[in-house]
Image 1: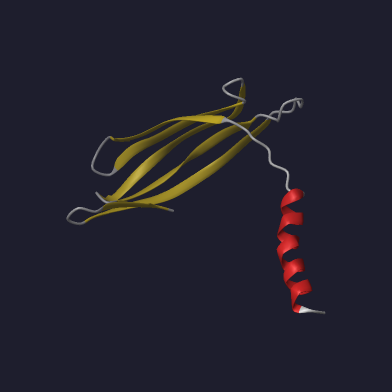
Image 2: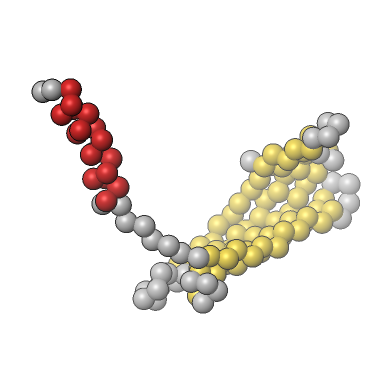
Length: 122
């Protein structure tokens, strides 16, 4: 095969693949409330609530409610365990809402240097 044929095949293959691509456009808005409250040197509470809307605020997409109890190992290291309730709404035209109930946990630690403050969450 000649070099020009190979070059022609290499140039037309990406064009053919791009012509088959299907793009779905979907607008979403995500609202969230996150709170950490410390009650004592060792104990606190965690709460985050989220609501996602789709189709330009027309339909609910997902709601999340996640309370938890936090134990402070140090000021910069904390462990949280809690309960999560998630409602996932179906795409337009379907009716089944899928609720999810589950425990959750996380370790959160912070570091501070001159101008850099970091927060890691696992």
